[in-house]
Image 1 (cartoon, helix red, strand yellow):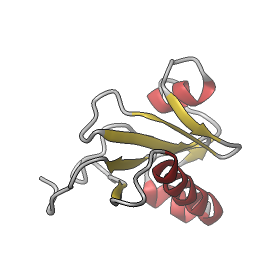
Image 2 (cartoon, helix red, strand yellow):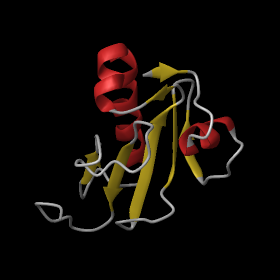
Image 3 (cartoon, rainbow, N blue to C red):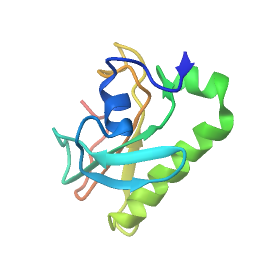
Image 4 (cartoon, rainbow, N blue to C red):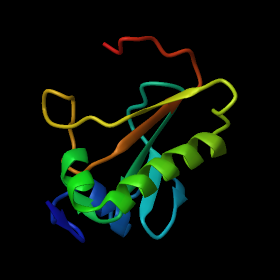
Length: 119
């Protein structure tokens, strides 16, 4: 599903500025902000400004925005100084995939050695 915003959506509230967040990057299509429960020294979430439930919905409806989301994640990694040591970008989709907020978002993780598989 895609809409400009969805009432009650946590990330739509952050995008609109109604819910405060530590924003590290924003442009016309995306907003990136620090995760409040970081799983690594650097843990930034990157979301599209428009509401899409998950990666499947986003990629089915707007491939350009899907690319913009990935480009923003790469830009966040550079801004956070992660490019030399490496970083991980994760998109969880659905309950079994570990998605806890129903607004597509990319996790940019780094600042330490990350193990595989991830838990």
